[in-house]
Every structure is written in structure tokens, then in C-alpha cells.
Length: 272
Image (tube, rainbow, N blue to C red; front, side, top):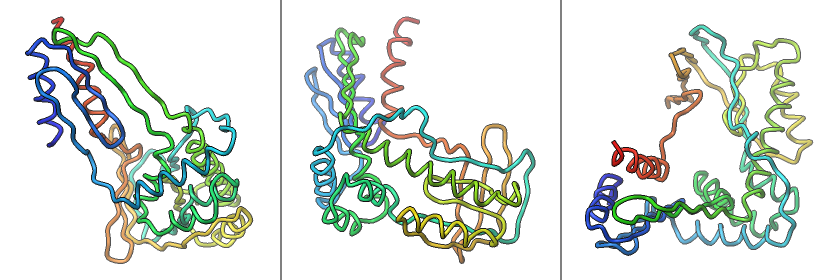
């Protein structure tokens, strides 16, 4: 079932007039009650993914939840100026398994859990840790209109945001090092990878990352192009023969968010 089919089922239930509930989570969408029940898995995940998530939650549950203001967490930063430009070669420093390493170094997860997480693919590693910040939203319908909205946030969310905040602090310090002699040397940061113009500062950045107990990979890229648009800066460059693309900020529409916005707009359309 895709997003459009799920939205069609919502409308069928609305037209029936019977009370029903739509529940959205990170990986599932459910309609309960009403004329038609439905549940779909938005993204198939392996047993290893969910086991890793359970291990992480068990580990962090031993500790007091850290106080974090997640509203100030930043996942990217850029220093690309106001004009489009091209550079033949740039350099990158990519942290390895950053969030998991930060949680391990803080003592929040065990060495056993860390080793298990490390066996997952990169996106599954991020997703398993991201499940700490999972949330669930309920939308109750009566006579075709939303009468109640409830949100359940994970009590463990701040462990995830702790990793995000520490990663941001580390990348901000790496940025400072990159800009010590030349402010234009720093290009942009994307989560746990920093991109710079010149190689001279790489050694200093490596020394800093080692002091933080972090592993990293040095990257070389070619044909870097930054194109400024009205709302985003499109960045393209090559890693060997593979092209990489970024949009800063990157508008990433998720199924959960798209369905949520669709539901909240239903009442507006009805009132018109």
C-alpha cells in the first residue's frame, strides 16, 4: 500500500460517518475502527534492526534522561556564499558510526550493543538509534471530521538528541579548526561530515577527533559545484566516479509527515 492508497482508505472511512482512528508511527500507519481497518509498513526493516533498537533502549533505560533542548539541534551548516561557484577538488572528513560512538563514550550503551550496532548498514544504524526519539500520533474522526489529536513521545528521546547535540558540537569545533587561517576554507557540514577547500587543516581536524575518541574517514572529492537557487543551494560533486548531491537545506518529505499534513488539511477543506 502506498501513501495515496492509504489516504483513499481514510476518505472511505470519513464518508462512512463511523468513528475511527488513524495512528502514525515512524514505520507504520494504522486505521482502526470505522468501515475499513488497515495497517501498512512504511519501510521494511530487518530483525537485526529491531533487535539493535531494543538493545539500545534497554541500555539507556538504566540512566537518568539527559536534559537537552532539541529545538536547537542543527544537522547541517554552510559557508557557501551568495554566488554559485565551482572548485576542482575539495576534501571531507566523515565520522564513522558517530551517534553510536558518542553514546558508548558517554557510557549510555554497552560495548556489546555498540559492536552489534556496528554490524548494521549505515542507514539502519542511524534508524535504530533514531528509534529512541520515535513518536506516535493519533487522529480521531467522528462524522468525517477530526475531533481529537494525541501525540505520544518516547521518554527516551533525549538520549538520541544528546548524540545529535554532541555531534553538532564536535563538528562545530572541526569547523573552527578549518577556518583558523582562512574563513573561506570551510564549505559545509552535513550531520557528521565536514567539507573543506584545502587539505592543510586536515591533520589538525584528525588530531581533534582522535582526542574525542572518534574514528573517521578522509575523503577526496572532485568537480564541486554549488548552485544557488531561490530556496536552496544545490551542491554536486564526485567521489571517484559516483556523483553526490545535496540541497541545503534539504527538503525531505517523509510519508508520516505527508499523511499528517493531509489529515490536518481535511477539516479546512470541509469547512470551505
